[in-house]
Length: 341
Length: 260
Image (cartoon, rainbow over all chains, first blue to last red; front, side, top):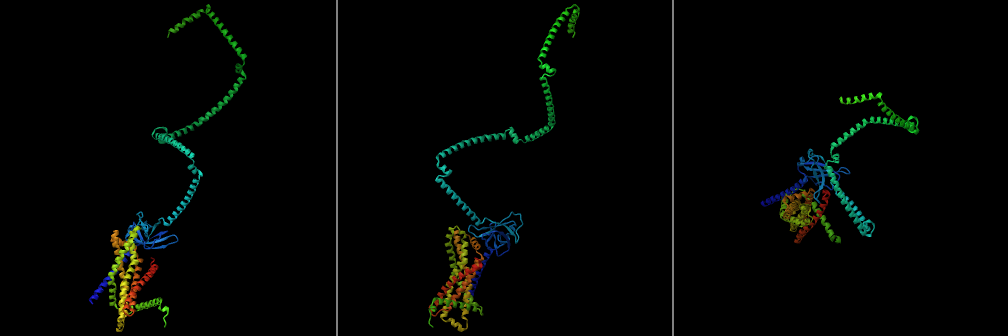
């Protein structure tokens, strides 16, 4: 009987240990799936979940903080992912956290990554819907690659055609490859180009030098470019010129008028001169009538001859006794007047 | 009545046997829920089935874990995925290899012992003697044994799984310098209830099948010492085959309900 009891005890021990192991395994699995302990349920809406499944991990800053509880289709283009998080992480996740779908390594299972937000928001609450960020999907990537491949095929076709042309000696490129004369010409052209560019470079250096001088020197250009006071001076000058022009305007009008009257006087003068030219009037006669001029000359000669004789007469009169006294008296008075002052 | 080809053929024998086993199972369920219950004998049988198979299951499980890891590791290293070793070994042991290997070991050890024991009792007419003495031999012998295997095999599987995982850990620790905590963390991160629950449920069916076939073969063994040997032998063979059939069905059903 004692042996039987002992056996029963052993059996009890066996059963207890086995059940304990099972419970431990269940708990460990359950804790991975967050079945025990307090939970925080949140959700996020995606357009594509890339094969995410209920039970997949949810990570925050790389730490497993929960699992995907369920995935439901909201409509034809949006999928809602409901997540069950450990309540303990609640204070650390803010309302502006962003969920994205990633995978655990290259071949690992899918998971939801929650990235921290900017930080100023209040902490997450039960039932909150956080924003999602869709990464580039593999299919899209493959589509793009497919397009690239097609393009590459087209390009390679074109290349093939070009190389065919070239080997057959058609087109400019083929000519370039085969024509040695052209090559020599091309080389010369390149040499020339080189020389030109060297000169250009030198010119560039000079230009640079010039620009440096303009920049650093104190010439007019420099002042124009850099001296701001020049601009203001220029402005004032222009203003003064403006006022001057305003003031000059009436004067100019006056000048105009004078010119007009001058022109009228000119016309009159013209008419007068024409009259003179044609010999009308006394002046005209004087100028034009040669006979009259001859008369006047003879008259003047006569006058000259008359005055000469008059002078002789006067000399004769001086020596006449009647007038001699008068002239002597006049000669005496002359020197006295000179000594007096 | 002249025997036809059909009556002598293996197919007819198979169908006949299947029908007999079905009736035997029906009788088990009828007797199992009917008072009085043979608690003491049940506990005794549990001890024999459970405790006395523990060492065998433990050894098998440990070596299973060691070998599975050693064999798989080089391939995983080729892919540069040795980090996935614990997860992979964990899943394969918990889901499939643990239950099946342990159940096969039990079929070999327990199924044969039940078949031989009941067969010899049948041959020595102890069963008939029990009927005469007023004890229900089916209840005392069959019901307790089938219940014992049904209850104990799942527990043995859990032990086997645990030891196998430990064996796997030993290899991982030796080859990859993986810590105990990291190893089991990785194992259980990969596991979910959809792995554990169907695998555990099917072990009850495994245990039931082992007990049922062992008892049936022993209870219906033919006369003579050859009959006893044959009963023990066929009990193991049929139970083992049935295990694989059940395993297949279990996986199909689990696939539907647990969305593996």
